[in-house]
Each structure stands twice: as C-alpha cells, then as structure tokens.
Image 1 (tube, helix red, strand yellow):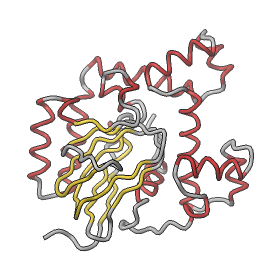
Image 2: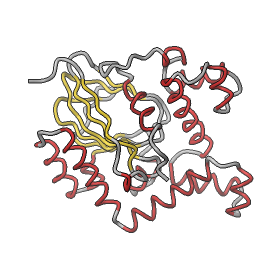
Image 3: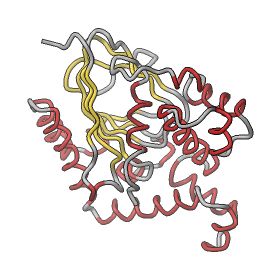
Amino acid sequence: MPPTTSMLDFVEPPRKLRSWCEGGVVVASGADLSASAFPAMLASMLTVRVRGSICDDQGQSFPRGTLHGLATRPRTFQHLGAVSAVGLVLTPEAGPSLYGGPAGNLVNSVLGACDVFGNKWRDVETSLVASTSAKAAVETMFSFIAEVARDPMIAARRDHLARLAEMALARPERVSTERALSTRQFERRFSSAFGISPHRFRMIHRLRLSLADLVAEKAVNVELANQHGFYDQAHLGRDMRRWVGRTPGEIRRLPDDPSDPHWPIRVGARAQRLPSRR
C-alpha cells in the first residue's frame, strides 16, 4: 500500500565517489506531499521514480529515470498521487561530464536517463524498480556511477570541469596569474564547459552556502550577508527570493518535515556539511 505520510532519507556517498556524488536521497511521499520545490542549484541529479508520477509546472510527465541539469532558477515538480523515488545528487562538475553533450542543453533541463546513458542504464533502472530495499537501490545507483566514472574520457572531463570550477571560485587575479588566461578567455572556456557564466556559478554557489547556514540558524541575516559577500541583508533577501522563491525568514522557519515541499533545501544543507570531497 502507498504510504499515507512522507519519508525522506539522505545517504552519504562512498568516500571514493565524493568527487562525483554529494549523496543519495530516498523519497517516499504520501498524500501529504503534493510537490517538491527545488532552489536554483549547481548540482545535477540522477533519479529513478519507483512508483507514482511526477510532472513539471507545464503538466509534462517525466520519464521513469531522469538526469536533471543544474538550475539557474527555482523549480517545482508536481506529484501525481503517492510517489517513491531514489536519486543521487551529483557534484557540479559530474553532471555535464556524464552528459557529454553541449553543456547548455543540460541547464534547466530534465532528460531521460535512457537517452543519456543508453542500454547500460536500462538494466539498472529495471533492477531499481524491482528492488525491495531503498538502501540497496541507492547502492545500485552508486555502483552505476562508479562504473561510468571508470571511463577515462568521462573521468578526464570531470577533472577538467573540477579545475574550472575551482578557478571560478578563486580570485580573478589568481586565475590570470596561475593559468595565463585573460578574464574573457576564461569566461568563454567556462561557459562552454558548464553552460553558464562563471559569475552566475559563483552566485549560485554563494546561495547554497547561505541556504545551509540559514537552515542551521548559524547567524542573523546581516552577519550571513557579510560572511557570504552580499552587499547587505537586502541583497541577501533579493537573491533568496530570486533563486529560492522564499525570504530568508521563511527559509529559517521551514519545518524539518519530509512532507514540506522545500525538503530539497534541507537535503542540500545536509550534503554541504559533509567533509570536503576534494
């Protein structure tokens, strides 16, 4: 029988996969969870819907297995009845590396996993749907990523994107000095690899750090704004409304409840607390 209340579990990734995955997530939603609201995020997601249906805000149903690209805006996915799903939160550099096509095509997109990975994914998806253990299902997905990551070409892409991401978060003069690249050269190279500008990448990274601190109630808004490089707390509030759809105060008051549509914010905060993956 479908659950009447929702359940959410976060699974830490194996240490050897932390450069690829930020964690696994198990969601079993009952009638009390009609949607999942995601903020803008640099992470991609690889998901499998075991039961139920999910659609976007236009009413378009998703395939059973999906690869979600990084998002530059908040997104809400509607649940059609009770839904059970398992997924992996991928590192920012892993998603485009696994996709392999033009990075811009993945931004704000939800693609069928079979279309991306082909026959090797179909067997995994069949196994996941038949699994009777949520933990075993997540481990199966970790194993799939570990297998794909052994491909030298994909691994090299991830390493290259990881270096670009590190450069994007560094001081501009360091990029110019250490890499002998002009600002414009670096912006072109980065945008081609990730599908977004390094400036936007930094802004969404800053958003994630701020969200984690808001959820943990680590500081008042003015301190958070100063710590994460916002001009002031009004700037912090504008970015939260733009990229999350909620004010900082509303985010602080989010319930620690799997039936709340904004549960992805808490999952992101949990992943942020893991030891450095590098």
